[in-house]
Length: 263
Image 1 (cartoon, one colour):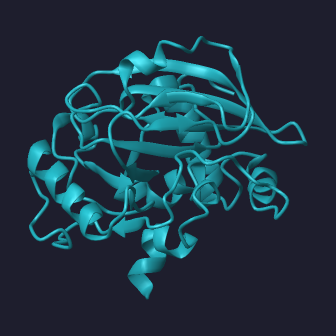
Image 2 (cartoon, rainbow, N blue to C red):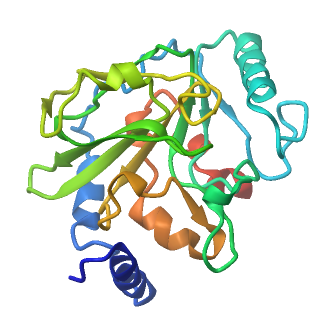
């Protein structure tokens, strides 16, 4: 396989366009993650009253247009929504087309901006522990400091019983909490790996976890995208499929923006 990330993406795009799995192991990993015998540890402890937010393009579900909203106002709106629902967690959907990504970090070389959210957001209080759902190894520890990037982040590498590898990404963390980790460290289900960060250190977002499932890092490492261009939506969401299995307290259809849009 070619070594550069650009070449790897091109190869995977070609496979996807030909109707092949983006990664040979992807169907097997998906079967493993869909097994009824799999019981991941909670990534974030739930109070059983979580809500799902509509952060999509044009949404006014929080009472105002979210385009170009500043982090303080955005945080207040999310906290109000959680308070009104007597909940400590609010989720943001996978596959959602958003207008929140409005700086040069999300501008593509072709002129098309990245707008499709590839993970699940878990909005909660800064300092909330973040746990490993499955056994794994610390693959990456980084601090992506650009405005609206991941901020402090961690990627774990996991293996299925068949030996197939896959990854989970944790973004917008507390920087000090990530310093307890070391590259190559083994973690077990339920081990606390970090804590939720606060703005501006966390990429300047309302306190939340961006959680993403990834089949192949494509040589991108800590720069693997969390937001995709709409023209390549299906490819990138095949590379980072819906990780609803890790948040069983919410109906998976509520976390899938495509399903919600068809209801």
